Length: 253
Image (cartoon, rainbow, N blue to C red; front, side, top):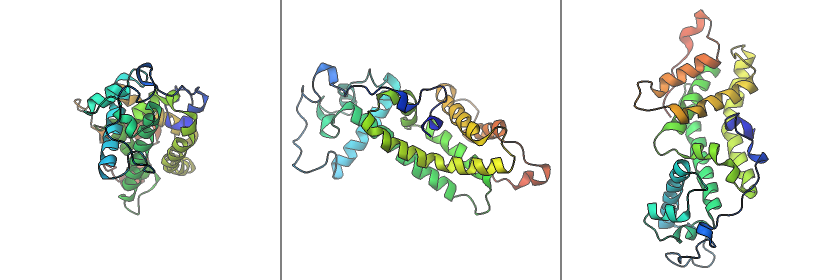
């Protein structure tokens, strides 16, 4: 299951060795500068009104930094500077840079799972497997390519930096995200509408969709719905002529 969400050309998350915990610029986390304010005993990191807002801001900034510069090249000082904080302040919300990486992946996948569920729920009750797959493909393109959605690019390129203790949580949410794909592809395989076995189609679909991170440009004329249509044409056999009008167009998530 883990391999199916990442590009097939990338190594599986579990085959990667776990890195050491980040010690920003050679020191212990947060040692250079004290946090903005002491954390009250018993209060979880980043919880409570302003804390949650700041935590989410740090996650978004970190996701962008990890995508643009890479996990290794990004320091907590970089993230703090981008958010207008003191250099040690991110450790008020996250105990290490690795914990922040985990939060980026978990937060992003949780959002993607819920928006995928909403995209499917908007389909009419009569929608068949082909329509559901079209909705899944279009939704995934938006997750990959919409502004501010940097977490999947981070997941694809920075899996080796995820600590072993975080693997199970990411695997669980990723499996739940992929379950809808597994079910709809199985239906299409039963209908003889797949050009390859369902398991291979799923791997190839995710791999090629993730490839858009390297080449798609929103300034070009190719829209995401049009691009989703091309992917459907590549992987799914056309409907018989008598049923061609039955398919409903995919909707934006």
